[in-house]
Length: 104
Image (cartoon, rainbow, N blue to C red; front, top):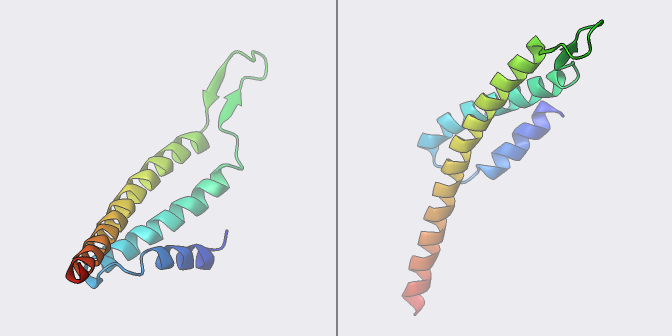
């Protein structure tokens, strides 16, 4: 996944966000892209270590713990971004309804 491509995708989704919120959105987008890249790399590592002599003994690896932390932070950032998008869409829908009422 290319950072530039992901950034362009996010920018397209958030193109209608007002300037005041845009600074927050830009930082959150950067964080989301960072988490996406890091989690992609972490997925290449084992998440469970199995004892060589006793297969019933297993423990999570550091990669699994970091992945979980990143995934939690990523989901929280996405929730904020989605709430901002919903607000923008709601404002656009309200504006459309106001304009339609003028013709009714």
